Length: 279
Image 1 (tube, rainbow, N blue to C red):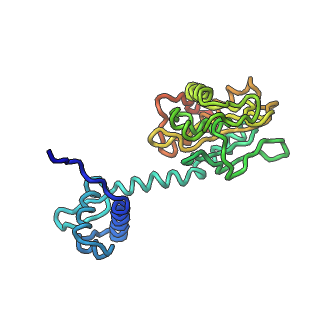
Image 2: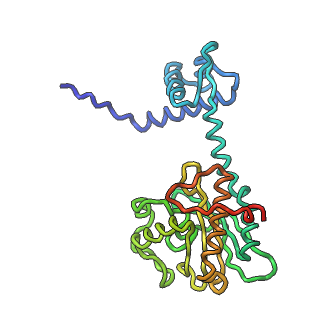
Image 3: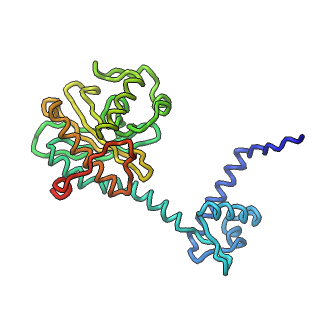
């Protein structure tokens, strides 16, 4: 019996098709009135038959549509939807800024904002109170330690053990006697993050410093960023952690809502009270 298993597509061919498909989308985006197959092929300098096949694939996926009367192809509203998602992500700092200032004023502590990246995270903004009060500041552009910072835990609170094992080879570096040094301890901590609605760094990265952070979710319910506060352990006391955690979680919830995100069912978010919304 003949083997009907399809031949694998060479990487070079697949990459070429992808590049041509992107060229096709860009050509259609430049011509909102629409283009026919021949015109598209001319615009991207590609074979007409190949362009026609690509257009059909893009049409099936909902990225382009064909006018049944004129037969012209145009980009679809799905492209606009994707662009909107990107723009909401780009405007993270602008959206979070006012809420960060409110949180800093309410707690008297430095507030930081971090964005999740493919292999960790990066601090993108901070807010602190003026007046000479000692605060714990975060360097913009620095990367949080996933397993030893409240920021890192918030960013990866819904990650699986497999995902974290790929990122964090054991044993972890111990920064203080309180630092997690293995996946098992970290996973148990992340489970508590989801149950309580915020992450805690109890002198795990630096002695005499405590931090609290909560995740900001995207529309798929995956953490895209986190907002948190840091302060000396003498002010960010264990007795105060619950109050601060609620304020941080409420701030994260507001940013999530304003950016069109969705809090997953497994996460115990704290929607803000009317006082927290209006001051």
